[in-house]
Image (cartoon, rainbow, N blue to C red; front, side, top):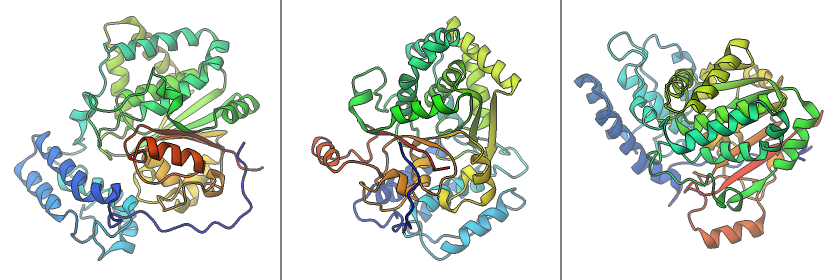
Length: 407
């Protein structure tokens, strides 16, 4: 089981779009322009909005970083502070974690998300999100039926928690900034669920849950659509097993990373499942709504989850809130990159050494979509690299990593 390391950590340099032949470079030069162009195609924006988006498109990848220009937006003072260190740098030269969040905030600036008018609070990525969950799909019905069975059998829910953790992990393969829902790799229900794990601390997680139950558990959500359903099934299982008395689901305060989930996406997911033709998703929805009404499932959003900072640099207040949790589950690639500073760590650097600043027990569930990872075995790295040269970025490999600070 991971414990706090009594060492001084020197954080390596961050990933940047200028890293030669890297996924960051490909993202800045190819993926981001494609995302901006797709945003224009998929929305019926006024021509002035489209002109602003095309101007943003022309800035990529070598245009300068400038302040956010969004008068009256609630997060504008925050972004003035976050942008200041990088003024004069380019999209490619500034740290990738910063520029990726900055891109999505610039898209909202261009679309007038925070401005009065026809595009006020219009999610520019909603079309892709709503297409990412089919309530009649076989996988949705199978997940819901199994969840309903666990809901009346706490021992079954406990026995199946490793399966629920893997389901939440591999649900992270559905990332609409990289693939459409139909194109994304899927390991659920195959032997790749375990064969493609690069690290697996499930046993340490179970021991911790047995020791602290019933617990407050916080889940840092990632994508809407099918992944969000997998997360809600995990939440349902933790409550059914008696491992959690309360689950706090942390969501984005505004659209970002194309498919990242907001409170509106959770509520819409429940509405979609409630209208499913099969009774199993409807029963799951009724139970989740009951948890919401009773306060056992809480939905929380904050601009901190849209900020461009690594978690080590977070203000004290959000970290102090997470310190009250008995377990924080960090889902997805972006949250993992935050946790490990999005930096050029040697891949064998112990996970505990890198996240030793974190104030609560931590579970990271992440499929690899960027060239940053820690806590791996050297022999395993060589084996996987020989088998799959794109293992760090193609979403086919995952980690289940647990850390518990010393008390």
